[in-house]
Length: 339
Image (cartoon, rainbow, N blue to C red; front, side, top):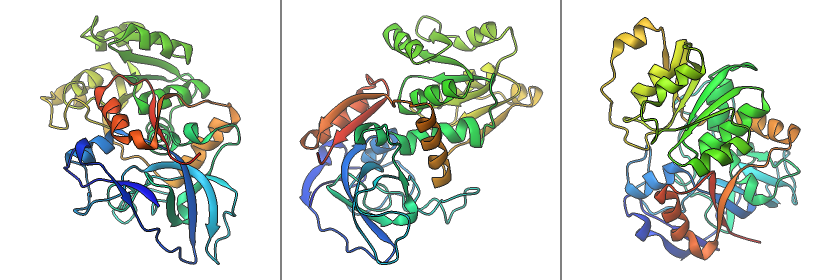
């Protein structure tokens, strides 16, 4: 089968086309013809060689795939040929709390991923695609959708009317915006681009802040919330934004720490505001298959159309990586694999 391969640390230039063998399916496995795959920031980290749990051997990259079941093992009961499916981020994390045994072997980091014509995986690691979505839109739901759901609802326990702050307009933040809007949350989103902020308003953002024009954006969050602060801040920036995210959270509020686009190095974070404000900082590492099923149900119920920034052809995979790295995207970057 046609596939791309990449060794951790080799950089985007290390992407190579390969004629890769298809793993023979076991009795509980499903063979999926991949139609589309989407990229995440972690794929850039893998290319740099600084992601968790990476393999030393070249792998087929990417973890978010959407496609059609073309073959099932003899004991498979959840799917049949012709079903449309998406794979979950952690194949062993089906439900419940995270554990080391559940968060290993993520496709495209620990084992072969989905940037190929075929993907073979246990039936328990798949979820049905909402009927109204095409493959390219569906491929955006796994990592970003699960992460957003976990931050807002599974870990965040947000209720209608709660205020959430979203940083930037990448995949997780835009997914969180759409899910939050559908669930009746009040959303405040930041960006350095007024054009992107206008697009966010079209998706339902209640308030927008240009952090280039308003560097102390945490003060604007406090103004917009009458000095109270946000119930949840979905923190994707890392070192340069975490102190502001803490300041933007209300007393007893939650800062869901998801990424480190600026850096994963520790910030100079004053502890007194955290203690005095009884604020909670909680790490989020994607989530379970059951969370993806919850995302799919909400997306289906509200007919949400995930935001795809740009679709690249299979031959253009390096260009797709470069586009994500540029930071110019709004929503998700997708690669079309098999029409």
